[in-house]
Length: 355
Ligand SMILES: Nc1ncnc2c1ncn2[C@@H]1O[C@H](COP(=O)(O)OP(=O)(O)O)[C@@H](O)[C@H]1O
Ligand SMILES: [Mg+2]
View (spheres, rainbow, N blue to C red):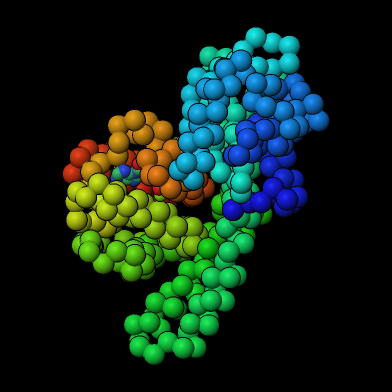
């Protein structure tokens, strides 16, 4: 978790094109705000420092609710219709996303669509990209420790099974590290170097990893062996399948319905999307189906948005990353869901050998 004393983290947040205010968990005092929040609130950092919530709103009790809930649950909380006050203006209705940062709570403030547009308008994707950069930085911190611990364990492991699992930890931390490096450099998954990826190898490896997380759920695999390689980034595609499968596992376990995840591939000749005037064929389909509870109705329309989650300790970033990666591949992702059947379908371009 980020500690406030970590100046580097604050500098990162300062650059994000979204308004962030940091409040202490203990006494709800304003601890810090980023550049964008200063602009949006039209108040200087100095004038707000150590002030109470009543500086931001006429209803401090309402604003205190999501902050207290974050303290209680330790996870992110979304609050809608909170009226915030800016220097010289009437109240503005906002969406808030509150999440824990060390001993504090960070509030991401977004004006509700009906509200007046201020200064520069904010593109969703800008915010997500900047956030991606910050997250990548976060991801990398614990990795060296995890890998070091795995290497220590490896030297003591006796059984083949233990050795295999430890090798899994090492290759996975390496993969996440490469992915985080790319995200940090580009703010998103950059596709400047596409390679030929065998999607079946990716799916099989993800299935192994998922099985090591939960041995009670049955996996079915149904692959079209004649499928061409896809054009993409192997680490990133592995993250996509892992995030989707992990959600299916978690839904099944959390709601105690379902017991089965099916991985399929197929050739879809007619599929394409138009991109800057030309058509990009997307013939490779990956389908991940589970017979769990289905995606909760209130989540469906915002499934790929950041911080949307129904899990007590969820971050709501897994599917945001998935859609970013698929988008970077020029692909398409579709979801259909009802109780007992949730299907994620991904369409990707085939690799063209330009030799
Ligand atoms: N296979 C699934 N079955 C049921 N719900 C799902 C499934 N996949 C995703 N969801 C819902 O989508 C939400 C967002 O998923 P994600 O972005 O990965 O964030 P997180 O896993 O941290 O909650 C989950 O909290 C869950 O409510
Ligand atoms: Mg997830």
